[in-house]
Length: 100
Image 1 (tube, rainbow, N blue to C red):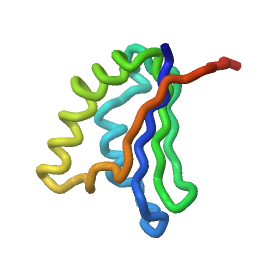
Image 2: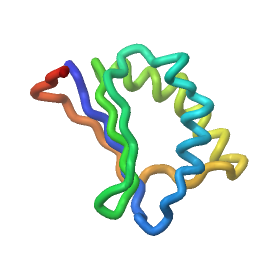
Image 3: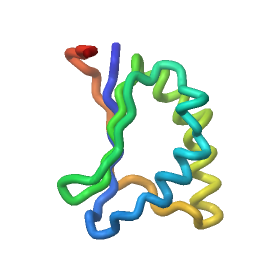
Image 4: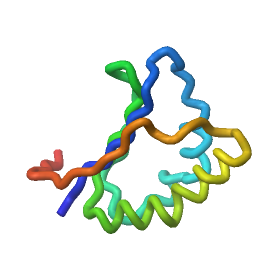
């Protein structure tokens, strides 16, 4: 079952994407796409920076998070090159998924 995965970072005042861009560069998903990722989006709106992904399954998302994403985030937080974790993070099963 496909899922949505959302991360929200409060604060529309700071429009910097330095931390996000550093993580994205290390992940290099264009050349090394994660299994099961259908779409990844990120942007500002509603007073926050939001990351919205759609995955083929919760297992695909979890595997990517634990094996690829978290090691980069933990390293960046330890050495101060990226900021704090998201203010909110959640997933939900999708009732419908239409591909154009």
